[in-house]
Length: 236
Image (cartoon, rainbow, N blue to C red; front, side, top):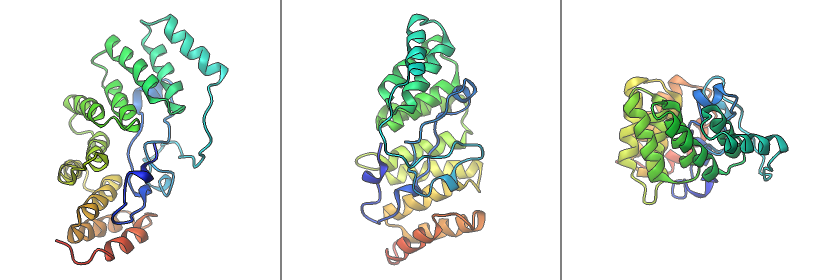
């Protein structure tokens, strides 16, 4: 999805300042490479977690490969094979075909309902497909199993930034929960700065930006954040 079309229409902040987290441990372990649509390519690579795949700036449509089709066919032929369902979800996810990825992830969830990473991945795929209610449901299910997952908590907060209408207070509350677990979490500090700016609270935006500057003085978003916050006035 193109988050540039969803965010920063008021303040003018770069869509690349919002950083989420994509498909993680369980699918990565089975060879799945996260797609890039859950964060803008603009300035985003400098803010990705350690070991995260680089975000591509390509806008070329993605095509199904023969190998990908074979993976999907294998999953359909073995509906009780958990790993096969994950691999099929991988194929569709990297093609930005989220509905199909979700379908296979739901099969995997039925096969192993206690697998937390599948819950996270269902949240991520629905997030990228802009299915906010579904994404919230799956993220909450994952957090019910592990409430101290800062990455998932931050992505949950992002839902409330992108929703129409947005709920900046709820987003800020979730980001603050993340920071209670990890006060120096760069992605959360960056997203919290944006949320305060979108809400029009320049004082809190400046306060959070100052913390971000301390934690990550080379953050690529700092200059733009400073500029946009300075245009807001004193705020409240």
